[in-house]
Amino acid sequence: MRVVFAGTPEFAARALRALLHAGPDHGLHVVAAYTQPDRPAGRGMKLTASAVKEVALAHHLPVLQPATLRTPEAVAELAALQPDVMVVAAYGLILPQAILDVPRLGCLNIHASLLPRWRGAAPIHRAILAGDAKTGVAIMQMEAGLDTGPVLLETFTAIGARETTGELHDRLATLGAEAIVHVLSRLSRGEELAAATQSTHGVTYANKVSPEEAQIDWSASAVEIDRKVRAFNPTPGAWTTWHGEKLKVWATGLVPVPSCLGSEPGSVTAAEGEHLLVSCGSSVLAVTEIQRAGGKRMAVGAWLRGGGHPAVGERLGN
Image 1 (cartoon, rainbow, N blue to C red):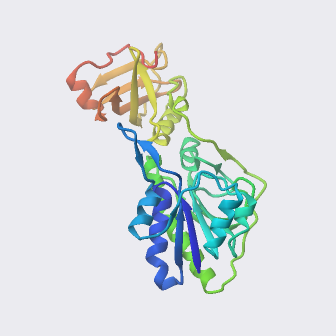
Image 2: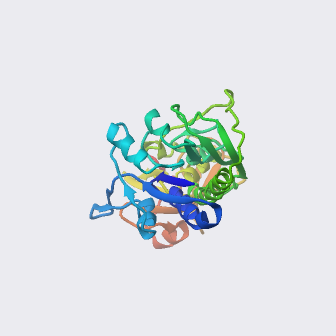
């Protein structure tokens, strides 16, 4: 089976590695990799290859980096590869119908949610932010709609009570890699897989995450703020302010105490030991890891011992 792969970040790169490793024993031949054009990154803003491009080059795969797939030339370029199937994972470009029609078996997407919940760009962030108990990976037959196609395989997993987006991302990337190898292996043997039409009920959309959205509103409940901290770790990072300085909050914990009477949301109610206790709209949140502007991530205990930290009664977020 001739496979063309399309993806950009590490989530996709893990699937590409799995397909390349499984290929000889499962009748799979990856013939090319599509990925986003190189982007400036780092302090020097040097053009940097995507994770998928790095894997492809290491395995001597042809790499294609079109700025768009909406041209006759892009369709002809894909057709020249004679793909049986195209695997898409966090690619970042919309595939028009003319592209979807090229592979003999169509295009299969590795999506990091249990469809139809969390269609769209940021399903992992949204699942944690919403307090979902479970999530998973869906292998979906792509069509023109946004993540609306029939599902060939779903893999379920529970979301850990303290799990961050980074941690869940890594687990789902592994599950997605295993799932796509399983599906393509069966297809290469000529098996037919039943495709389940997505339900019209329970549809939600995982919009892109912005740095502005990651600002902490201390009038929210401690549970909601704790989810936000975990959902936006490692990117873009939940944040608040202190004396006009941006302060990223990387880790928090729930504590079994009620809100302090008379304390405004954002008020520091304790600053000792290994955490700051901050009053929220309901209950109190323990802040345990922070990052000051221009500094490194650090345990709050080290910050408190070093001085220059909020005192009891001071407010964060103003």
